[in-house]
Amino acid sequence: MKHIRNFCIIAHIDHGKSTLADRLLDFTGAVTEREKQDQLLDNMDLERERGITIKSHAIQMEYSCEGLKYTLNLIDTPGHVDFSYEVSRSIAACEGALLVVDAAQSIQAQTISNLYLALENDLEIIPVLNKIDLPSANPEEVTDDIVDLLGCSALDVIPASAKTGLGIEDIIKSVIKNVPPPKGKEDAELQALVFDSVYNPFRGVETYFKVVNGAIKKNQKIKFMATGKTYLADEIGSLNFNKTPKEIIGTGDVGYLITGIKDARDVKVGDTITGAEKPTRNAVEGFEDVKPMVFAGIYPIDTEAYELLRASMEKLQLNDASLVFQAETSVALGFGFRCGFLGMLHLEIIQERLEREFNMSVITTVPNVSYKAYSKKEPSTAIILNNPSDLPDLSGIDRIEEPFIKASIITKSEFVGNVMSLCIEKRGTITNQSYLTTDRVELTFDMPLAEIVFDFYDRLKTVSKGYASFDYSPIGMRISKLVRVDILLNGNSVDALSALVHFDNAQVIGRKMCSKLKELIPRQQFDIPIQAAIGSKIISRETVKAVRKDVTAKCYGGDISRKRKLLENQKKGKKRMRQVGRVEIPQEAFMAVLKLNG
Image 1 (cartoon, rainbow, N blue to C red):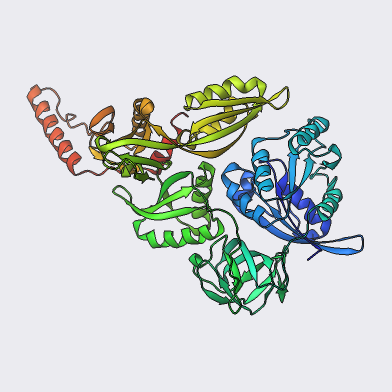
Image 2: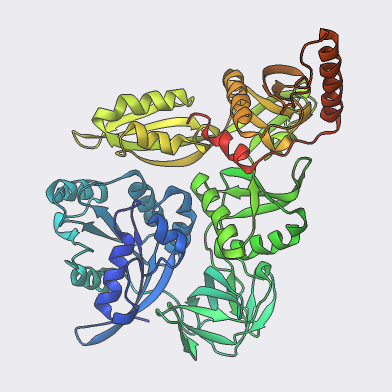
């Protein structure tokens, strides 16, 4: 146990975590020449295409230092704010963290928030100054920033370049020297923390765990404490690049377990594995439950594929524990699921993974956040609204509260005005402004979560020419004047397009939605009125004109009454059609609402 080191890599997005992980694997010989490739641990097509890490990946390396052989368990983590739950799970399984900072970009918002997460878990922090080979690098200045942030000495900061391999040996030696070995009792009852899992169609659920106390043996009878179910450990092993089966995994080590579980619901991330004969009394205190920020409905395009979609979502939830879902129905779209996500990028990734990995064609409704409504009869009891259609009649409501966040934005001083204008437009109030250096400013705002759901991140990047980093944390609920804007197509309300918005913005949003839908809904044989309404009051209207046949073409000359008669007949037919006609809504219409400012 003295020779085991568990550590993770934390950093802001695009500061070189995955490349650093590649170099560490190369240096320790964990991968052969044939297996080498860029972004080695990013094994999803989506991760490679977008150049981001979505999943945390665990891998084991062996390294000899001063005649002793060490086992290094590395967990590479995502950098995007939407995947911070993956980071918290990785941190729970580690004793140390490499804090990677880009020498050209310096400290960013996500660097700070991940650092605080690591410090809360008492992790040993090793600062690494990456990308020092870049022409735009500022090593001295950024080293000073790291020293100010951590309160360490400038000599503790390891200069490195993951691209050229500079400083990699120093990083590994620093991990061995500074990261403490795992604490745990080797002779105690088995206690292992489940920090990840993945579904294998041939072998069932593969569970990734860290042994906190005791040891796990092959063919041992084990028990999952959350579900209370017992299984046989058919195969256990270490997480090398190609999984290596073993007979025993001891205290402090990380490994995988295959028990032949076929039902994805039987494994929960954060659960404790213990022995069935001698179970431990206490579960490992892992990490808190995930709190979804954004809600959206996911429905199968083919209504018969509902059960198939349920099975796909359960398998996906196994691999991505931050996905939360429950069944719901919609008048417009039939049976589907109300899903909770950590942000818009998370929603986009889940939708793409459903389509790629499970061949599911789905429709995603307009995302929204969770609100609380209090009725006049029972002002102390809150009605939780995850869906705008759950909102009761406004006349019986005392107040509605919406979630607020504390947004931290780090940008260059020349873009402060642009960033402030954007945040004020999004109903934000500035609470703090501090200069980190003469050129870099940290702005703190209190903002409604609903305002950052749609296009805030994209617009922030635009107004700051890509030089702003953004991080947020929830700060509770506040009273707000909200109304539900309903969209009526041909007189029928489309519940999937309803949105809860602030009263001041309702008029503008209603108009924009109507004009956007007019462009996207294909013309039918009859006029389609598109209306936006608050309650019974119509606030905006557009009409998609009917496709008309020129019925008067055969009348040349003659009395006008002949033409009028033909037109009147056509009018009656169109009216009859409109009463029985159904309007099909294309998927783009749901997604277009997100790009109202585009």
